[in-house]
Length: 145
Image (cartoon, rainbow, N blue to C red):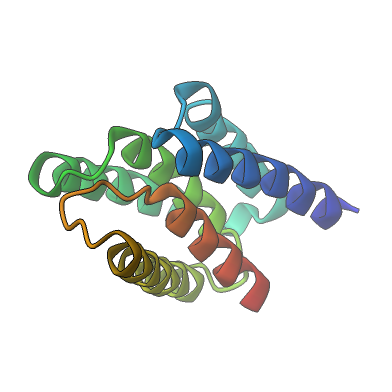
């Protein structure tokens, strides 16, 4: 029952975020920021042994996202999304492997999205929403584990 509630909540949240990011090229704070303490609670409730690793991963992802925001124009909404996704990706029996799988899946999905966008628009300067790739990688990692 707990898993059904977990996947239902994550589904509604991630679909809402992906929808907004595709349409408006932004991830609203009202959906990203409250998700961080909720994700901490979910991990603490479902997999307390992974909480330390998941929290550390969350902080590292936020820091890496902040650097990518400053250097490579990663959107600030994406930066705010990374901590909660890092927590949720590490919420498994093998948190490190699941986190690596999420990162690889996110990169693959982002690359595919960028390639399709470039093939259709031929515009190399347009901004591509990355939130759906971040969330798609989360789903890939959670379903495969």
